[in-house]
Image 1 (cartoon, rainbow, N blue to C red):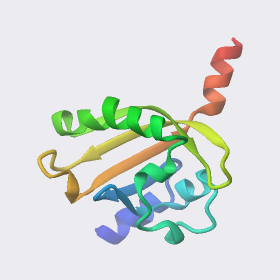
Image 2 (image 1 turned 135 degrees about the horizontal axis):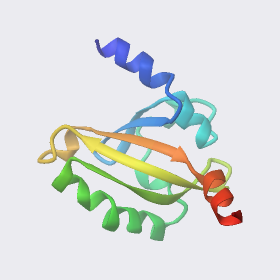
Image 3 (image 1 turned 180 degrees about the horizontal axis):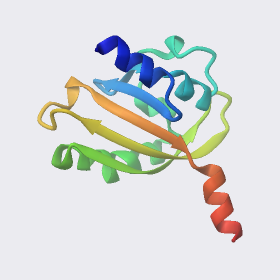
Length: 124
């Protein structure tokens, strides 16, 4: 079952990652490409804060999105991320956990690049 889940997550159309102790333990290839990484394995154990465009953006994420996770077992919002080359993109992040009482046990992260969608809406 675990192997089947990993295979499905690896081929998902959105970026999927596993966060433990505020560091990335696993990410699928879509997330790796989204952030401009050569390999998802290279960034194992990277701190989550490294993926945000600025310290202020990470602070916004912690105060306005992450704090909702213990209450609802899920939380989501829009944040600005940075790619490996330093460029930035607007992303929609959704977090979910199986045990809101123990967030160190693992948090599933879904990230979608919504930059183009946002631009289209602004143009109309």
